[in-house]
Length: 264
Image 1: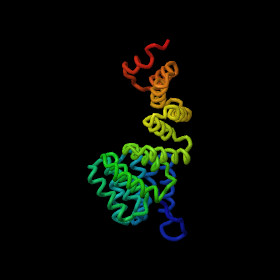
Image 2: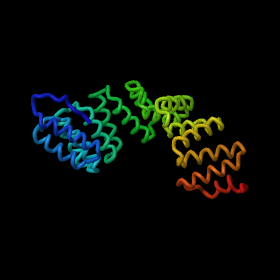
Image 3: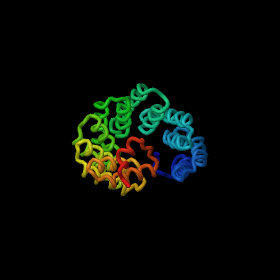
Image 4: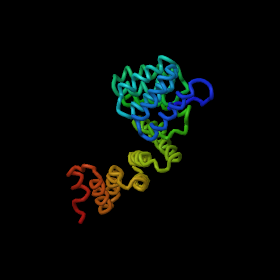
C-alpha cells in the first residue's frame, strides 16, 4: 500500500480516511476499508494512491474485477505509478494470457526500471512458460536491485536447478536460508539438489531441518525416506514414509512395498 505524508493543508479528511482504510486492510476488515477509501476518494478523486489502496482492499476481498478497475483508475491519474502497474499486471496474469501479461510487465519495467518486483513477476511468468534463460535474466536484475528478498533468491535457485546449474542453485538456497533460517522450502529444495548430486547424507540433514521448522512437512518426510532407503536405513525410511502418509501425502503401493515390505 502507499501513503502520503500527512499535512495540515489540503484534503485533510481524505488523508485521514485513507489511513483508516489502510488500517482496516491490515486488520483484514476489507469491507470497512473499502468504505473508508470510498469516502476518501469522494473527497479527493485525484489521488492515485487512494485508488491503489482501495484496489488492494478489493483484491483481498476477492473482488478482482473491482481491483483491476481501481488500478486502471490510478494509472489514469498517474501513468508512472509503479505499484498500480505491478498489481494490475499480476491480476491480468491470472486472468489473461501469458503473452499479454509479459507485455504489460515489460512496459511496467520500461517506465520504472528500478522496481525489483516487476522483474521478479516477469521472471516468474517466463519460468512458468518454460523460458528458463529469460527467467534467470530477470531474477538477476531483481536481485541486483534488492539482494535481501529471500523469495527472489529461492526462485532463482529453482530456475538454476531446472537449468542443471546445481552449484548455483545450492548457492541461492543457501543465501535464502542465511536470510531466513526457518525457510523450510529452501531447506527442502537444497536437499533435493544435494540428492541429485548423490550427496545423500547432506540431503538428509537438509530434509531434517525442513522437518524441524515444519514438523508436518510430508514432502520432506517422503524425500528423506527415499534417501534413507538408498543408504540401507530400512526401518527409519519406513517410519518417514508412514509420517509422509500421516501428514497427507498419497504414496503409491509400489513405493510402500519397496520401502516397508520387509520392515516389521
